[in-house]
Length: 598
Image 1 (cartoon, rainbow, N blue to C red):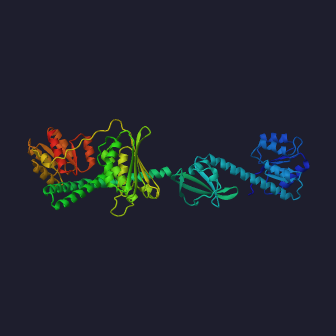
Image 2 (cartoon, rainbow, N blue to C red):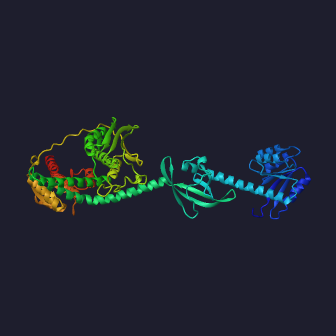
Image 3 (cartoon, rainbow, N blue to C red):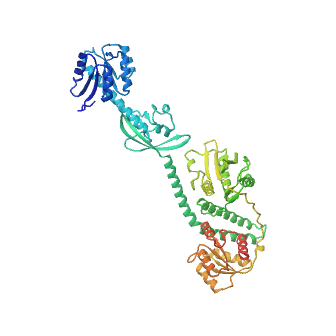
């Protein structure tokens, strides 16, 4: 204990004047310490003094005129529970000593001890121990009341104290945490980032440590801040940034790519119809059309992934949708994979039926790969609570490694080999479900399969019925009239002009909106329909439509778009109907006939 100028305030309870003088003499034998000693001779006087005088410790004789034996200590301890009491007894009784220590005495010293300095030093040590203990208790009280997680770790990395907030943070009780090794290395110089499991979930925290004295020994006082939610928010922000970047990429290429596909698909369709049955060249054309379909699907996935693909939400019966997909799933999956369905009658949901079918197919294909062609695919459908429908798809495959699981919805992330996956399947599912106002989660363990759960909000109303679209011949879609085609992509313009001309229409062309407006003025009253792309230089299709609406409100228009954001914007603005690229010849001819007849 370091010497200072602060005096220890002592209450000496002793009825024998000689013993009182001896106690004073022993204490004053240490010149480095100053003592302010108040002497009383009865227990009642001691109690009265304690009520008005703060003291550091009491030196107590057990045998007083108004109290004797261990009862003297008990009564004094009842007055001040946290005060240091040193018993100075004339009896050298070991049993009495043990009982006094059990009743809260800091030390039991004999009056007959010849080594006075030893007795005084024992007193000082007892006083110092009490001070340390009081400091520790005060720190414990302060730390326990702290809402932040705080622990004390000794030099052996053993947890010696934990407040309630720390126990709640780690999901442990005191017996399972205190006096146990801390599984993390602490450093005074840097913040430690730690991970741990709580209630079966991975959590994270930041741990800061500072040197500290605990029970007279060097230790570390560590504060712990739960960063689990912060990291989740950061990951969600990073995910949104990824999606935004991919959105810019998808939006930038979709228009041009769909223009290319429009030419490829239509020209391949022309060839297919021109080549007679049995000609081996039809197989090559079929391959071109198949590859075009896959390319269109890839662009569609990119746009759905970034929510830039227009959707057609309507009231959908999920049970009917899954039942309708069953035969397709059966043809897609190997025969050694059993498909087990448990479909309850459920509330309708508001979503794009085609996108829901895409989700189901993407998940089924992933499950097929995980089961390596042999296993069981289980599809369950049921209402959940009063507001949601839950669709669960489980497989008995190899499962997903814990370090991979958090990334399965990341765009372009795949564990499949080259040419076996794009990394867009689950990312697209995630985007589709989110766009429908639902949520999607995945659970998996290595060797124990995977379950993907989708929750969609309940919709009001009944599911709409679908009508079958007739598969008429191209010749049945012939028409008449003059159509102005405005398109800045020359191959697309040439292909559309040729298609319309072959099916009975007079065709005029323009490479941008300004040219189209000039042609309309030159051919006053002779044009029956303007077919215009939306994204064009100088004047867009949207601007052209608005200009013609103002100057020639009776002139009919049909817009084309290779980018769904343009479709959505025009739908909101109540502009002319839109046909999305890439389209097939029949689809365009139907739209043209409908527009002319409207």
